[in-house]
Amino acid sequence: MRTLVLGAGGQVGRALHALLPDATALDRTAFDIADPPAVDWGAYDVVVNAAAFTDVDGAESRAADAWRANATGPAVLAGAAREHGLTLVHLSSEYVFDGTADRPYTEDDPVAPLSVYGASKAAGDLAVQGLERHYLLRPTWVVGDGRNFVRTMLGLAARGIAPTVVDDQVGRPTFATDLAAAVVHLVTTGAPHGTYHVTGGGEPASWAEVARAVFALSGHGDLAVTGTSTAAYFADKPHAARRPLNSVLDLSRAEKAGVATPDWRERLAAYVRAADGAAR
Image (cartoon, rainbow, N blue to C red; front, side, top):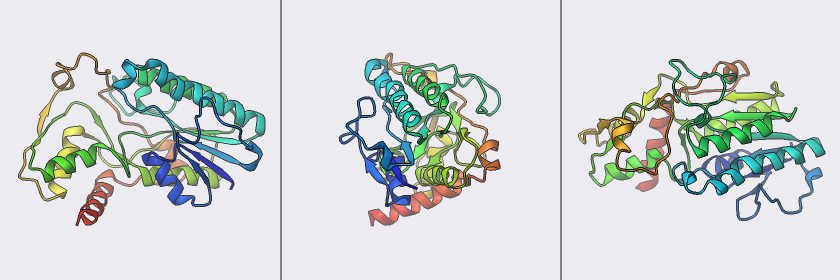
């Protein structure tokens, strides 16, 4: 499988390159997906797009940048894949939904983004879904090698800071290594093309509950994590993007295709142990 990984500097891109060491892995400085350099597309069978504009709040004031990376870029890649007979793998987000459903979102639910970021990702999804040979994966709350919520909480715990965290946004963390494994599984097993929801498994939790689990696992369970509503947390942040309250995705289609969706609490424990070991 001759593979080109784009967005290799991000959390998922790094995990993908670790699983696919023979792949060509390019970060955003080497490959602009909206205006790609000259590429020998014939040298590849699969293109995995892990590149994106991911600053959810920043997208509100930098809409052109968000749309360029999240909508135009995937459309350009879809055009190249169509022309050269490639399989395109694209990573999306649950922010394409408005989070008002009282159940997990399925791949076939209509999109209704609340933010510029969500709208740009939804537009990119549409471009990719028009391609016959595609895999579109939607993760949530990604945790990997890089900046993420869990690392932020670990830093606060180490400094003895007890944070206030929103408790009305509910979902499941997705670990970058598991997401990368899902990409490889879908492509190498010839799973049906289409959209797949891929997150950690297990019972959903709020951001505050995830934070409390991080504090407990890192030996700082004595520090209280105070819960607050999304409305209260962002009350003094008028330029913040609106966020879906329900980020729980239905995993049935991915699991039917043989994708592993490990319990996020078990994966979190392993992640914290590894982070603790690296810090010693």
